[in-house]
Length: 307
Image 1 (cartoon, helix red, strand yellow):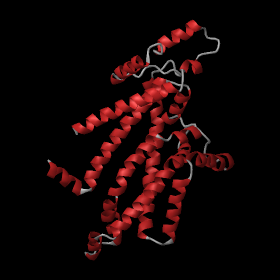
Image 2 (image 1 turned 90 degrees about the vertical axis):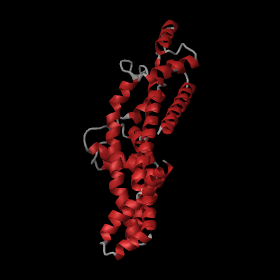
Image 3 (image 1 turned 30 degrees about the vertical axis):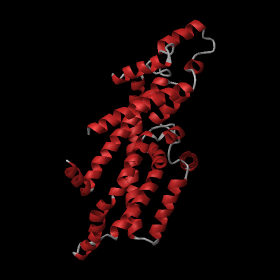
Image 4 (image 1 turned 120 degrees about the horizontal axis):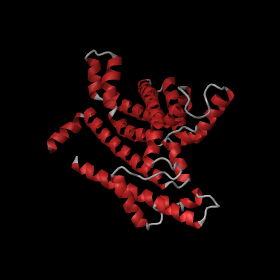
């Protein structure tokens, strides 16, 4: 556990240094945010206010020192708010969209993967594999535009953008979850095919257990081990990487905020978002390790043997 904590700290430091450097390569935020008519004296005062008058090592040291205390500075494009405050304001919208998308992946991807394996070679299997191929091939931005054109502009079933109730979740959640549905479907299909051919599943059938109980209780739990590691990565992508969907649908979340902050060279917000994303990744990986040990008894036995 201690080793994992040290690795996490070094990971966050590395990410902070990389993001700090890349953000400054984009140029001077004064060139983007300051009015053309601003005098040199006012520009210099703005640099001092934002700490841009210091050298890069001094700026990084100041950033790390303040970040440890939870202070990422004031936003450049939202002058009345701190970087943390801006992210906190946008975070609920992203979490809501992420929760709906993860739920959609589980509700659609897992059953389709199981059914595709159980009914191997049937029409259900072919349809499921077609969905998987489509989901892993289609670009997110193109799918978002097509959904807006068909279901929002033509049929007028759903709003084109924003967050104005449950209907606003439908189209963005499809875009965010489509790749996850396809990936989980394929992983569960291959894992279930292997599990259904295992000896203990055959033994369970010989004992007289119903087919449904063998498939959905015994085989599904064993088949969940392999996709679990990927699902942790997928959850991170859904919760923190839905930037394309948020931009296409003008969804007021941290993905759209990251795009706006990067365009405006809002260093405090970009840096805070990068560290927030890194913390989420570290925590999700830890959660995956815990769940992996729960699902696979061999992991727990191995840990006891080492101990």
